[in-house]
Structures are given as structure tokens and as C-alpha cells.
Length: 309
Image (cartoon, rainbow, N blue to C red; front, side, top):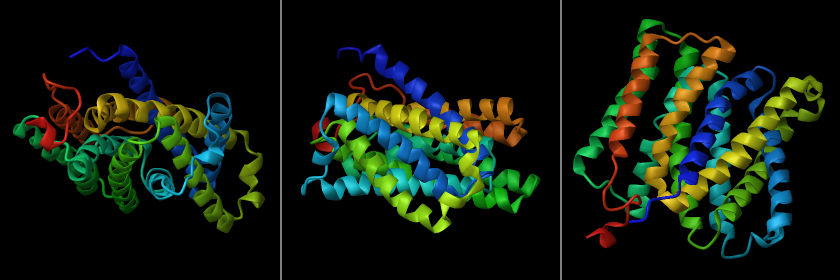
């Protein structure tokens, strides 16, 4: 088997850095504005960038939503953009950036779970499934054990919501892979962002964002631009192109870098406290995900059961 180009790995690492920083940026934003407003401007900025890119490279955004594509592209936008975005921003109103980013480390497990159910992908060795239990144990340390040591109801609520967001992301990854059977990663990502932007825009109208004082705050716009341009536009493109090249399960393995970057940046930028339970939980999550993504000597991409025999 030819070795995969280094550029896909480097792009994934850069995307994970951006996504790690998104927890810090989101924590700053939810203290300034309601979640639906944040989501709307994040994806509005991303949508404008996709329109520019597609005007240069094609195809036209108007040609994306054909009758055959409309349903699956709506599901992409509903799950991975609107659904995940609402849960992500709502959860960040209650918990910390460090705790949220550690829970994000469970993402590869949810990606693998939905890839197994929807695409019939399976891990090459049965013992690798122990990684799911180990990673989930790590989440328990962050969500549950810490709650007994230093109980904060708001943290518990926020962490539970973030965990739901991770499940939504796992579903999104598999729906996106299905969509890419007939479309490019650019088309799928852009269409999902367009759908999400519309859904967020309709929802944000209930918050009357146009009269909010934060509309004149440069800190709000800098962070919204970061989420829109770097986290969404660049990060989503890199992520889906990697899924196409490496497979959903193997690409998901790189997400274990998100809690590493997220906790580091939350400590450096927000001066958040990192408890021993967080460190142990992070270690268990990373080890569990590494087990799930133990290199397969035959292929980097997990194939359907019928093709793997």
C-alpha cells in the first residue's frame, strides 16, 4: 500500500489546533452574546468564504441543492452545523473550555460507532473495542468524578450537553461520508454550512441580535471571525478531505489532539484550573482513542465487512 501523503496528516493537526482553540473562543463569546446569535455570525462568515471559494473553483452554490442531493445535504447542515453548534454553544454557557475540550476527545469513539452502524466499518482487531470503554471512563472522570469532588451543577449540565454534541458529531461524520460518495468534500461542507447558516439565522431572529450591544464590540467580531474562518471554513474542509482520503475512523483518531490543544490554550489564555481528574480523564481518553485507531497493516481505511474478507 502506498503511504498516505504527509499533507493530510499535517492539515489534520492544524485543523485540530484550530478546533482546540474554538473552546476558548466560544467561552469568551458565550459571556458576551446568546448562542444562536454567535452561531449565526460564525456560519455567516464561513458561508461568505465558501461563496468566494466556489466562485473561483466552482461549482456554483446555486447548483448544489439538486432534487437528489437536497435531503442528505439538509441532514448534513442540520446535524453537523446547526445541531452540533447549538449543543456546543449552549454547553459552553455552563462548563469550562478545559472540560468541554476534554469531552471532545470522545469524538473519535462516536465517529467509529456511527461508522460501524451506518457504513459497516469495523476495527481490524476485536481488542481495539476496549478503547471505547477506556475513553468513556475518561469522560466519567471529567463529567462524574469531578462532580463529586467539587460539585458544580452548572458544570454537570454543561458537560452532559457537550457529550450530546459529540454524539451529534459522530452522526454528522457518517452522513457527510455518505454524501461524499457523489459529491466533493467542498460541496458537502459548503452546503452544510449554508443550511446551518439559514437555520441559525432564523433562530437568532428570536434573540433580536440586531439590537444587542455586542454588535459594536470588536472582541465579539474577532472571535466570531476566528470560529467562522479558521474553525469552520478551513477546519471543516481539512476534516472532510481527510475522511475521503483516510476513512472516517482513522481521521477521527486525530481528534484526540483537540483536548490537548484545548486544555493547554484554556490554561494559557483563560487561566482555567486544570484538576487532577481532568488530567487523568484526558490521559484515559487519549489512550482509549489510540487503541481504537491502532494501525492496521493492511489498510488505513476500514472497509465494509463484505469487502474485508
